[in-house]
Image (tube, rainbow, N blue to C red; front, side, top):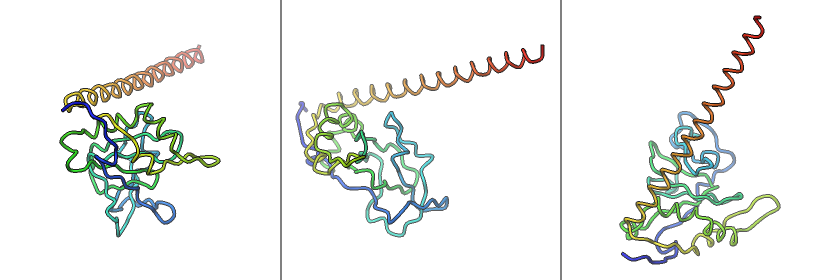
Length: 200
């Protein structure tokens, strides 16, 4: 397969998140988990262990599955996050659009690669260009996503890009953990020194 350019609407179906009536009511015994913007890190990673649970009778076909891609539809960044693992019935809040690869596209396009592509600066600039803005918040329009054009590389190259991207995120996470550990160590040393000075 050679490199080609396609529109998102040709390879994936787009739908909105679940629209709640009022606030999301937290229920530890709820039958469905809800992905909210606060669950996505700055590195576009999703923490599935801390999702809010709630109780819903009708899900209106809004369940999220592995391989789905969530795109934040409001704020300063319209970043994309791929769903890698689901442990229970899960839906996205209305602050997301959900992309799901069409059956005929699954063999030629990796969700991780499509996610990486959407997060690239030139794609984000396109989304910003077609977004609507109020006095405080920018809103992403469905048409903006459907109009996007994505370069589809051979699957081997997609795998390489996806792997490199994942390793880069792991590296940043490890460096952040080291910074936290170093800060804790320094604070402990300072506190021990302070306590020693008090006893003299």
